[in-house]
Image (cartoon, rainbow, N blue to C red):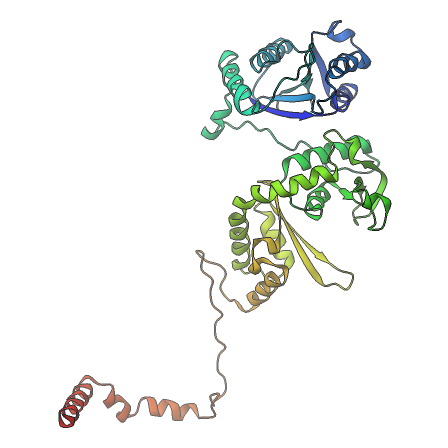
Length: 418
């Protein structure tokens, strides 16, 4: 079992996310703890009001919502009763057994999983602390529940038993084929929370993989000055289409202020991944490829998306690298001078003279061109050069006997000097 915990400030957004899944037939609300009615009798408003009543008792607390997902192995066959038993046990063990909470079974992924929604505010208005909740209480609860309910252990993943849980269970947004607001929200929430990026262009490079872009507006606009942010769907040419969605309207509020905090944090988090990125780029170049398309294709085999930026004049001026396996983003220049756009293009052009491809980590030096002219670069005939090299005089000087005689002469001259 794998537990994922996310705290937030918008209980309505979290509730709406789960209820929307129910309306689509992709989820079912299977438990309502400490609510006035049975789970199947509760309306959306009754669920929301129950949480809001408690949140009103502590208005100073901004982060008041807890949204948890418990994910299980694809081979697990878990009934609703077992899922409810797991949810109840988990919430008691992490200290939320006396809180109202809703449990949803989601049916939109290959692996069984449930979502649990609750509030951090208690009946007396006090807030339940969640510092290190995931590291301490949740991790302890996970191990105990795996034993109690005989579940596939998350630790066994390293032994070859794969959990097959994807951290990004999202699809490309296609305008007109999916509900725009919900699709944008799903993509943005997943990307902003999972990837390590250090600038808005780097974030947009990842969002573009799912046909979404973050826009600040023109520099002189009111939105830009107030640090506003919109998320829009883009078409195949990169043009924004449809109605954009405000960052503040998305659950978790991925506003520019939030992103700027992530930029600073992510710069440190991505450092350990630099060496792998450099290594894969070097291997790709040493394999003998000679152009951008070849580099892009070679890196894609290693789960790295290389995106070159070109201006209207056709000049390539930038490169963004996205490691989708480790969910980290770099500009080429972030990896060092040898990996800037101009340096990489120069290294690719050198490969045009390479005869033998990359082999065992060593580059094959270009083979010198064959000399077809009878004359050397210095203007001397080759026959003259060869004659001098193999002449008796040269041969005599290089023989062991000649070397011995020369040594004796030098000693005699040295003795005379004394």
